[in-house]
Image 1 (cartoon, one colour):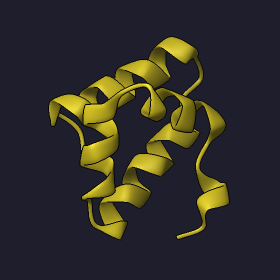
Image 2 (cartoon, helix red, strand yellow):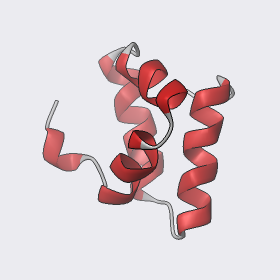
Image 3 (cartoon, rainbow, N blue to C red):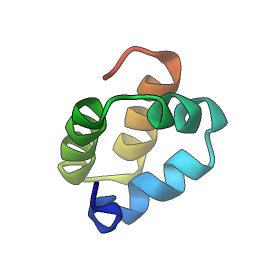
Image 4 (cartoon, rainbow, N blue to C red):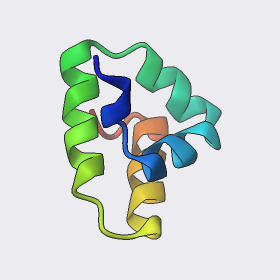
Length: 61
């Protein structure tokens, strides 16, 4: 995985949400890439935090 492909906003939001970080760390590479693709299309801070909250809640992979 290319760690430089992680959007800065996603990394910041993820670092503030331990549950999301743990879920993300245990996903397959394909699922991680799917989430990164979604994160690259986020257009606002609120949308990014919502994406991370969905990840933490297990409602988005």
